[in-house]
Amino acid sequence: MKELLTYRQRMLTHWENTVPTLQRLVARFPDGLWYRTSSNGSWSAHQILSHLCDLEEQVFSPCIHAFLNEHPVPMPIYPSDKDWLSKYRPTKSVAELLADYKNLRVQGANGIKELPMGGWIVLRRHPQVGLRTLEWWVEHSLAVTRQHISWLEQSTKLDFSGMISSGKTAV
Image (tube, rainbow, N blue to C red; front, side, top):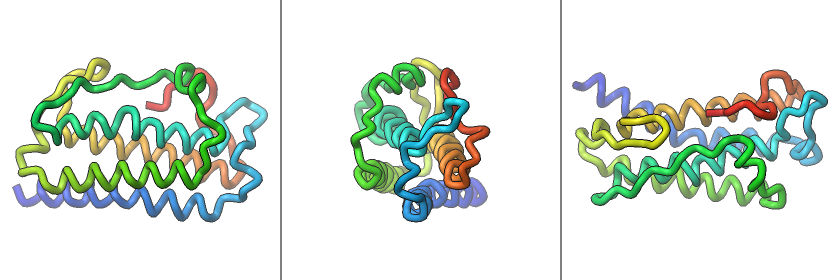
């Protein structure tokens, strides 16, 4: 049981640390390259960051909060890349994206920390992925965030191979 508690605490710490990781990455990113795409049609760095922030706002945060609320609401579905691109907001600044992302992560982490140990394994049904636990959602959110961070790191090196490309789903 102690190992499981240690694992969850470490995972939650990594989950929270994605905020300063993103902040450091954004701080060193050249301003003129945020909207640059590669010749193979991969997403720009701004699109990658926006996609991550929108997933946090539209999917991960609501799904995690479904576990934190006494009366959970239905969990939202993942938008397809095509649907997401149709609603992409290129005018939203990088600073706004990061601030929104940070606020959602802080709220989620604070709520998770207040849960009793058993709260991590309660099952809730998601329309696309079926029955999942809070632990799964935190792990999945962390994995998706790490993938987006990797794509952003690649874009800072102007190595656009391996980034999201049109028609591929990131989650």
